[in-house]
Length: 76
Image (cartoon, rainbow, N blue to C red; front, top):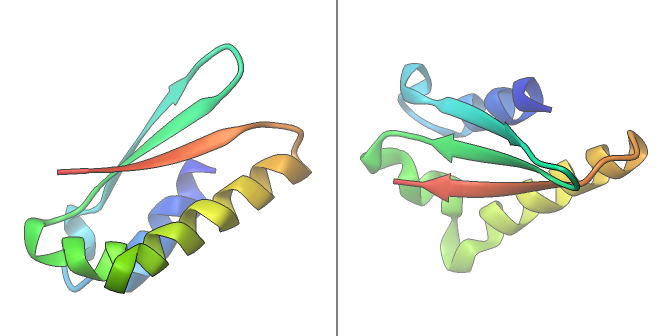
């Protein structure tokens, strides 16, 4: 999961070396924290949050296929 989110984010931004994903496994849900360079934040979030919504939907879909729950947080 972490690798997939990293791959997606690195292909969206201008500074792929600054992409980092931190995984926090909880009892019921895994939280993935995505960090990118400040100037790339708009590319990851997208107009009206559309790209961020699609990233979250894709990650939820993959997690459901594996019988897991995941949420994606984009942090500064």
